[in-house]
Length: 338
Image 1 (tube, rainbow, N blue to C red):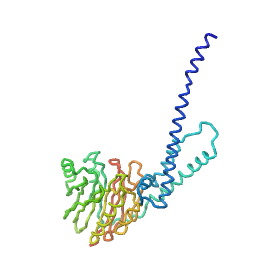
Image 2: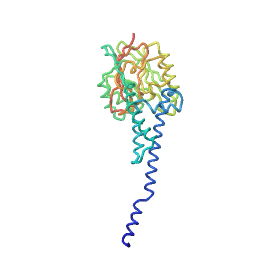
Image 3: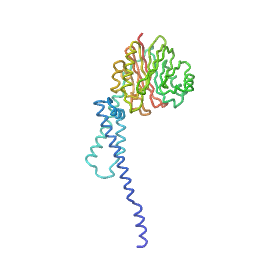
Image 4: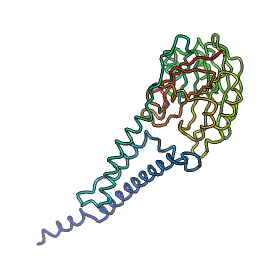
């Protein structure tokens, strides 16, 4: 009896109530997060079939739930919810698991059908190639990025987040692209052209968005290119800057116009409707492959876009793959009406 007393005391110490309390707290937090994700997905679906991103702050939920992200959200919610530890599941829990299981392949099929485009035509010998890329502040090095750009052999290159406002970085871009005329934009982007920049104008798209206008001559073609960087702040509505961009496109409608850039807005946004009245999103009309461009390596949002007006004909637009940035590069083939 005397020897067993310490063992009983040790046994009591090995199973403290605080251990069960911590497990219950962890389970509560995990399942609260799972419920939150399911709620966000449900609200996102309602918004997609109603007002979309028309009003803030509901637009934030819409941006967080693009079609390609829905299977990822549901898998994450299921992992957070976990199992029932051998206990009998309630009817609501079984129904929740069943709906989650059915919805995942359904959303995968929906994303595949909506985000894969096969409308491209074979480019002709007279087509002009345009490369656009958000290079993520050139974090992988200008030399690596420039080597990749040279391989794509395009006479027109437009870059966002190229750090061109630093004189040393701009000089490096110019040395790495010796066959091009490299011209910086006021917000850190740049263009590189095998041709002539005839005019450059800076535009401010309020609030906190930017656009640089370049009037270009490449071979026998003369046209205007707009390099656009819409603010990524979720707290700001995309309505005003995209309306300003559409108004600018309308003013420039007397000549061939190409708009490239990081819109930080999915291409099904209601705020892009004014731009659709002036231009065409050439990936949706003449693209090939998977549409989403951000974030690498698992993109779910089509933020990087190429638009042209009626005086530009597009044959092909393709979103390529590269690990040198969190954005996918875009390569387009177009011809300009004389």
